[in-house]
Length: 133
Image (tube, rainbow, N blue to C red; front, top):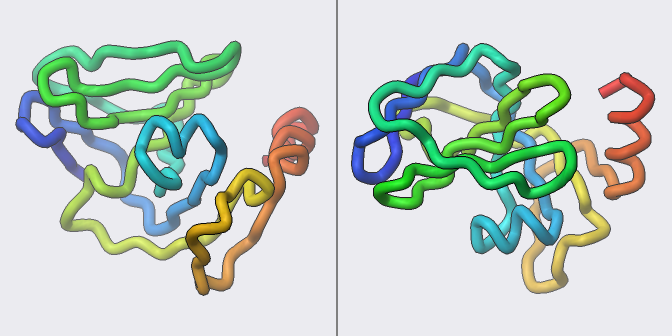
């Protein structure tokens, strides 16, 4: 998969993926203005062109963006180096929504009808801590 930021200063390359996870956590909603449609791409992600800027948003993760246009480029888990990339970066890729996390933080003003796996924040942390996710 190849994508770019809005201004084209940064190109992102990752292996092809079809699945998208949706995060309803308050931080993702504040960052993106809504839920984050994220593609879990593992650690094999390349950025070419300008150097992405990063903001450490928690003890375990950082969020990256283009320093020129502000496009959101990644959410990266620091312990593993795994990237979750916004699906919108990849305009030519076909995706399917597979899961929703932090469903307990989803505001009441929107509903999705997709049939997906749904986890609360506590369930996400339990799965991550146990190494099952």
